[in-house]
Amino acid sequence: ACNVQLACPLVYEMRSQYFRMGAPFNICLLGDLVAGKVPPAKVYFFQNCYRLDTAQREAVLKATRGATAVWFYGGGFIGDTAGEANMIQMTGLQLRRGTPAPGRVVPEKSAQGLAAGLTEPFRCETLLDPVWEVDEPGAEVIARNPSGGVAAAAKQTPDGLRVYIGAIHVPAKLLRNILAASGVHVYCGSDDEVLTDGRFLSLTATSAGHKRIMFPSACTVVEALTGQVVAEGATQLEIDL
Image 1 (tube, helix red, strand yellow):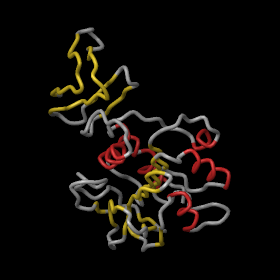
Image 2 (cartoon, one colour; image 1 turned 90 degrees about the vertical axis):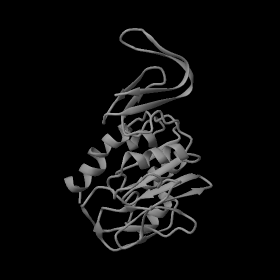
Image 3 (tube, rainbow, N blue to C red; image 1 turned 90 degrees about the horizontal axis):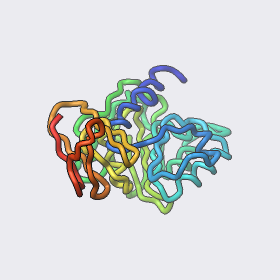
Image 4 (cartoon, rainbow, N blue to C red; image 1 turned 180 degrees about the vertical axis):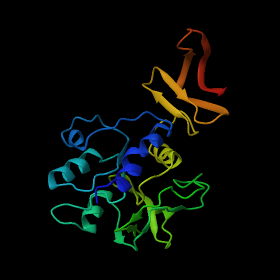
């Protein structure tokens, strides 16, 4: 159903997590990606792309070739008909139908990889039906459903890293792990809001404490309002907020 229980956590509330993942991003229309109007990126997140026609599928697969594509719950399920084969085509991962359950999933305990640093279940109690589980040999498990089935996983394919997340809300930490694994520069490793165009940078603290900003190359840091030089030849900046 197209309702607030599905759209609010996946589309509306997820925006806060993108702002906290430590790197700049754009929110684009699927139609603009299909039309070739979206500049190439290292990572693409497909949140609510449940229905894709043949032309859209071909365009998306072409645009994401050589990059990381992350598909959220139900991505690509509906075409001319509805079925798991449609999702397998887009995600690049083998999927199977699982047991309907609330959308809360439990991350794998791992000190490295995409699940590293994830300690709490992903927040969402919406009952998801249908549910899909990853059944891809050699895939990296990120999180599991309450039944034990693989709710989120990733695998490096000839076309690039492919990730399926069978949840409708995930923490910024997971997004940050995906970016780092895809060669994206992460400016801040904590859940603080980062805005930058590569020249100006704004950091808004979402919690008090010690913060570390990492730059992609050595640079001169100037306080925007006063013009005061804060650091020269800096590759990182540590501040308390």
